[in-house]
Image 1 (cartoon, rainbow, N blue to C red):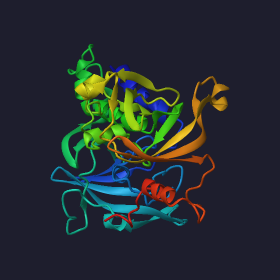
Image 2 (image 1 turned 90 degrees about the horizontal axis):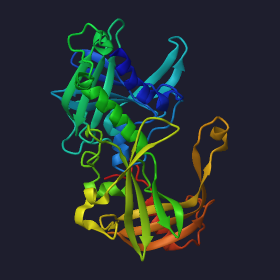
Image 3 (image 1 turned 90 degrees about the vertical axis):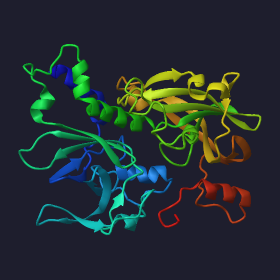
Length: 384
């Protein structure tokens, strides 16, 4: 049984083994101070706020140990998750041999709840966040893993595993050879791995056929394919999210522009935590869209907005090939800005690969300026 649990750990190690461990967030639960695990492959709860609201992250990368550029402080009160403080790394304190931190209120970085006003202390209900949190006590001699299952900022389930509980000794009365009990006892641990793998695979850009077969679709913000608009831009509404214990995975879509319309031609589930390969499974479009499927494709009439198409070709990465690992990289040759309204292509502009949207000539086409401006992410200073 101990070996079976080791398999759980191996599932995630390949994806993070080559990355520097990240400085954790802080979570207060009852009388405990916990470190909240974060990683380069999956966002912290605060990072998801900016992803989902299409806002530029206001934080600056501080070190390889803190890619997100901040440490968020959270507190669970009455089964609700609150953001209470944001800490930014300051100068190095040589007397204490550590960096100092500057403390900010959530409002200082534009963080707002979707459903309620901040508390009198300025704490913000994290109702934008859904996922699995893994935490550990920060006190010497105190061991265990705390898992919190969160839906829209509400703690719907939690699980605490002590050291002995994790190792599952052979004399444990709850140990079974079938492994079914292990999955039951580790239900939130399994969901946690499904959750971080899901977010890791959301980083892969969709494919699109536009004059050329090998193109990529850039939505302008991370981890939100246009398919999610069909599900109200909610990961919880996606039927194969991390909560699906039978089959979960991030959607990787294949799109087609034909006769001035955008079509969805295929959807794959992307899974797994390895950096050198992606586990895939092709979905039947009728299971997702039923009678919207016509001649094997779906007119994406739910898609509106400005997107960027990256033209180019996939090539084998020589660096990894020399090390016996087959990976590909995408070499961009040009870009196309497109404006879509309910699945119809209203306008498009091709620009060269070395195009810099921040250095437009004064005599640039006003319509090109407009579509570039609409493609840009908002900032916390420009949000209402």
